[in-house]
Image (cartoon, rainbow, N blue to C red; front, side):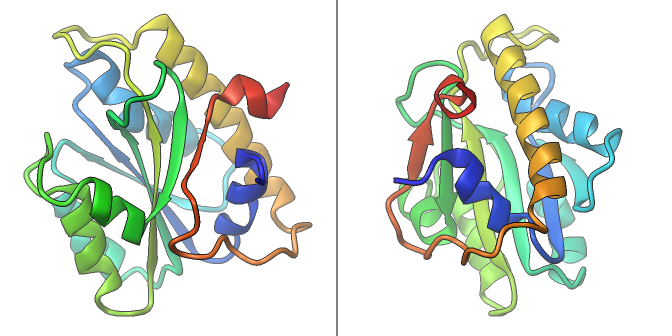
Length: 184
């Protein structure tokens, strides 16, 4: 099975939008927003949006932005070890997160709406949170994952021009891993 670096490289080619989702007041739930903020300050070719806890407010900008792919960045409970990462396409996202969500609209429903136009493919780059307690900071485990993903995404954006492989097939087995395994 390809590692996360290999899976992300083709997803970062072309017109890509990274959408940071989460509530920064609830510890690790703010992961997606914090990663998006870090990416906005980096030399990355993808457009980066911060949706916070209401990802539906970016729906119009995403739908009309001429993007080929949208990648949600979010803390999601998928039963992994804290800091583990999952990469899901829209079909897997809809199956795993159809309606139940801490957001006003579930990510599954949002992915369905975006992909309904047939032009944009949606992905989720999710991280297993350690703590969702009311606090402003990420836990050290999730902060480390954020730093590793930031490095992976910024390097991936630079290196994706060299990658000529096809994007992962929608519906293929989800990639679940820890970043330490990928970057070792």
